[in-house]
Structure formats: C-alpha cells, structure tokens
Amino acid sequence: DADVTQTPRNRITKTGKRIMLECSQTKGHDRMYWYRQDPGLGLRLIYYSFDVKDINKGEISDGYSVSRQAQAKFSLSLESAIPNQTALYFCATSDLGAGEGNEQFFGPGTRLTVL
Amino acid sequence: GQNIDQPTEMTATEGAIVQINCTYQTSGFNGLFWYQQHAGEAPTFLSYNVLDGLEEKGRFSSFLSRSKGYSYLLLKELQMKDSASYLCAVPQTGANNLFFGTGTRLTVIP
Image (tube, rainbow over all chains, first blue to last red; front, side):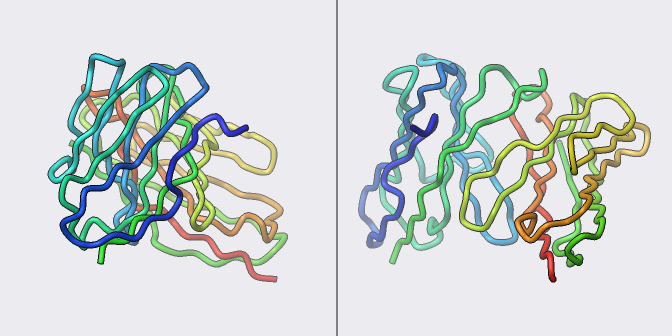
C-alpha cells in the first residue's frame, strides 16, 4: 500500500464550487505539505503543518484553506474554485525539516480542473 | 529569499552521459536536494548534498559547490526510463520547507 495517498485523483468542477482534496499518510510523519504544480512554474507551497496544532501559510495560500484532522490526515479546500486554480496538486510528508536533510515523500497527486 | 535556475529542457542519447546544472541563491544554505519526476507522477527523492564535492549513487551522481552556488546532477549510461523532469530544491530560510526550481525536462532518445 502507498505511504501517502490522495483523493480524488482527478476532479473536474465548476467555477464557484467548494472542493476538498484529502491526503492521508501511514509514515507516522508529523510534517505535511500541500503544493500545486503548474507547467513552467514548478512546485509551489500552499500550506504546511508541523503537527496537528500548527498550520502555516505557504507561498500561495490565497483562495485555499486547510485542516489537519489528525497526524495522518491533511485536507486542502478551495472555498470557491476559479479557473486559475486548475493545476496538479501534491501532498507531501516529512519526518523533520528540509534543513536537516530530510526528504519529503509525495502522494500521487490530484489533477484538478476548474471550468 | 531563494532563487533557483535550471535549464528548461535537455535531450540526450540512450547510453550517454548528461549533466543537469542548477544555480541557486539563498540567504542561508542548508543543503540542496535533487528530485526526479516522471510526467504526471509524484516527485521522488534522488540526492541531498550539504558538503562540497561529488556524491555517487549508482548511475546518478550529484555535485555541490557552495562557494559558487552551483550543483549538478550527472546521469550515466542513460536509459529510456530516465526521461523525466529533474527538480533542484533548497531549504527555505527559517521555515525549513523546500523551495523548488522549475525543473529540467530530460528526454532520452534512442
């Protein structure tokens, strides 16, 4: 079984709809991240959480919110989806910080299309 | 802040050697990561360098020069399955997250 899972894997929705993307992990890591990836722009950090009570905005948090329901679960919500939120979304986890040389483990991604 | 520059695309021949360069600017250096990402798939960790020099891991090697703000990933004996994007990343100052470059898309041709 995959260590980091994301649901749904693909989603098409309409402008103005509320969407939730879910991420679960079995690695026992405290740190979880949400990224979006757009062609030519690379991976950009939306939100990150160092534990259940610690949630922080990343580089591009506007229009998004998150919930850390448990150590293993981290959800990303788009309150009112807009077309420029069409992207590939990745969840990731890590044991400790990148500055200590800790790699991040990525989920398989959710391809979201907003019409 | 951070900045990373990588070539956008490269093409190389099966069996050959290719070097993918990465230059970075960061206010506090805490190592450099390389990830591989096949099209539409998740990035996977390749290497982490924090000291100057070359680290070899099978067909893949990664080099770091902190004084020059420069790293490269060296892929030997290229195989078709090496066609992928290669992402250079550095830890962000303070937050201890990763800042990614836009990646280099490598195409291996027969």
